[in-house]
Length: 583
Ligand code: NDP
Image 1 (cartoon, helix red, strand yellow):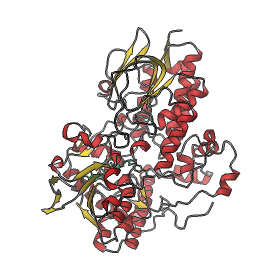
Image 2 (cartoon, helix red, strand yellow; image 1 turned 180 degrees about the vertical axis):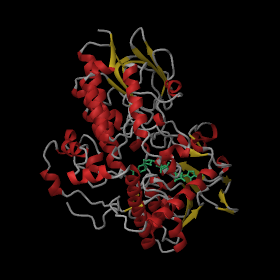
Image 3 (tube, helix red, strand yellow; image 1 turned 90 degrees about the vertical axis):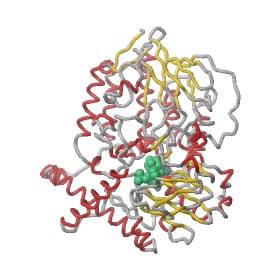
Image 4 (cartoon, protein in one colour; image 1 turned 180 degrees about the horizontal axis):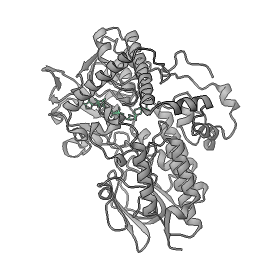
């Protein structure tokens, strides 16, 4: 494979300056964080994902056309997925391998794909290397076209998986599950939907994704804007035209500068008459080392290449004896200090890159992030920073405050009116809600969110005691992986193994024991207690916008390698972790 011209900065930078330098940067980080926390004491409540009434238009599916009428469904399937993105597709593939025939996907969109169905904004692509991110490449005998896959290729891959595993047959699209209630007598889940369906399923898998419901910032007067507006996950190509030529004579505004905006802004800057970028906190923008897949490399790949690649990625990083001894001799404080210094060096390189690319000095300064790398989702793009050199592109830096007012003409900031034809919200998504659009009631009629109110309780982030035959994917108390599909594959393999075990033994239900759940809650608490890093970060969705958070209410921080070990240990000793009924 050809080598990229410039390598991403990553965390390899070595700290070489006096400690005073790093301490002064840390003080600046803390000031910037406090500034933001003061502006938004309302934490996650500063957003709304209740897109009803006047806001309903922000959630309408622009890709599907009319909702096709159909008769309500009244039947029983063995496995039912709520959501049709990668979680459902990967797990279904494994279930098929175990011989499960009756599988239904219930999906709100008009096709499979999940995030890749909804996110079709210009420039949409994945920041994880395609040979790792696109799952089931061995099974589908497919090699991605480029080092980083673009949205349409990923969406097409999702459709190919659904075709290969015959998942379209029973799928119901444009349908939202509204309730999921366990019937102990029948040992079945009863589900209702917004299309009047009454479905039964032996096993239910919450595959609704971690960032699936669009959210808007609660900005005063938002609904009074008279121009055109939409959320990035509902891109209005009828207005912009597919090549964005509809924006040639338009003044465009975009609110937000997260990973979505970073990908959309270069295209918007090139197409719009004028573009105003309303920034609250800049993202870190590193190099994107992209290239087309080398056909000679692709030709030499042997069946099983991706499985081997994934197995390597899951291995624990190897350390030499000398490295291990050095680590052991270091105090925890010294370890943290070194990590922080290296992190600051990496961020200073991100700053240097901005200075080298962005010509206007004030704009360059405003684009510099002041927080530890990884406090926010890192971004990788080669055209984002140069876009700010265009004469038609204007950065409106709100210095941590954000846009707080919109009127019929557009946003107002510090007394200045920004008159726009179209306003695009790149304000992100509700984070990791288990029962998105849905009410889940278990054995005792207890709603899952009510059980979680006193603190999330799961086994491996997948099972929750009292909710037999229910499996949760991509939720809290599971491990975090930048390559999300590898995480989902690990969970999907585990879920398929659990269902297979229950079927082979003739059990009707499988439920985590109280002891197993308590063990996992304590594991999560122990590993999340190690650092105060989350609180020290600038607010964002990674740290619940700076809100207080119980230690058990986030991801499992013991590492993906360790998480995978726990999954396989539990699979080896099913009887110790689960209660079964119905033999
Ligand atoms: P984010 O939640 O990351 O970003 C929301 C943005 O809106 C932030 O920049 C936020 O500022 C800003 N904002 C909110 N309120 C205001 C306001 N009142 N005024 C001005 N700005 C405001 O959403 P994204 O859709 O960008 O990304 C969500 C996630 O989706 C990513 O983190 C990533 O995990 C995934 N994704 C992955 C991609 C990939 O693989 N390349 C591409 C796109 C998304 P502030 O930072 O101050 O809160």
